[in-house]
Image (cartoon, rainbow, N blue to C red; front, side):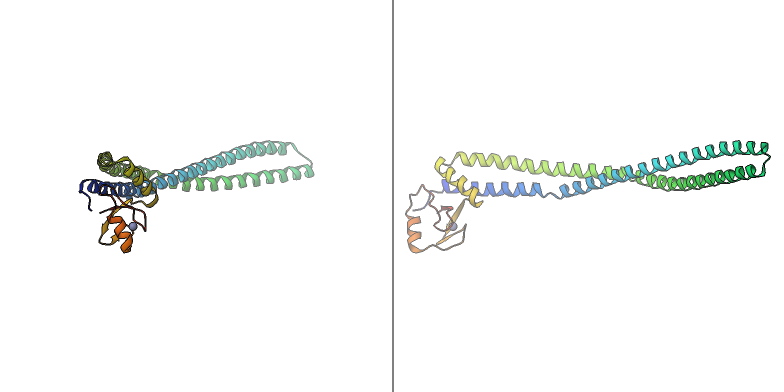
Length: 238
Ligand SMILES: [Zn+2]
């Protein structure tokens, strides 16, 4: 009571083909190039963020320089006005008040100059960091392109392999009876591998030995049928 070979061979070919499709899908998901591209993209995103921060810092430093220059000009004008007024004043108390005001203006100007110089230093540092960062752009973009190309190429290779497997899958399914396919598909969804060989008294799917009674039942199933493994339910190929 064994199969004539044909249907059994077709079923086992379908099992192998579906397993190969599963492996190819998994390989496609875990391609090293996928990680490489993710790292390269993350590095480029971090680079763009850093460039944005440095540009903002430069703009803020430039604004601080402009501000200190504006304060300086205002102080100069005030100083000129106060100095002119001082020349016309005779009362010592009034002159003293003007001198105090002049001292305050001088202090404000000095503070603004210090702030301007500090902003100039900051701008210089940020600008240098920005230049250094910009110099790294080409390499980062090249790595992204290379990783992208490697991934596309690896995917295309697997896709071509997958096309062949899918054609073989359709061809083998075309040779199997509808009721066998229905059982096969249900078991494949449940167990991943839907059919197994009977090796001696053991199912090659679950590797469990059958009792003599189970074995007799399996052996006496119609020759053109695939009996269920009494342990795991897989289609048994005798
Ligand atoms: Zn089994």
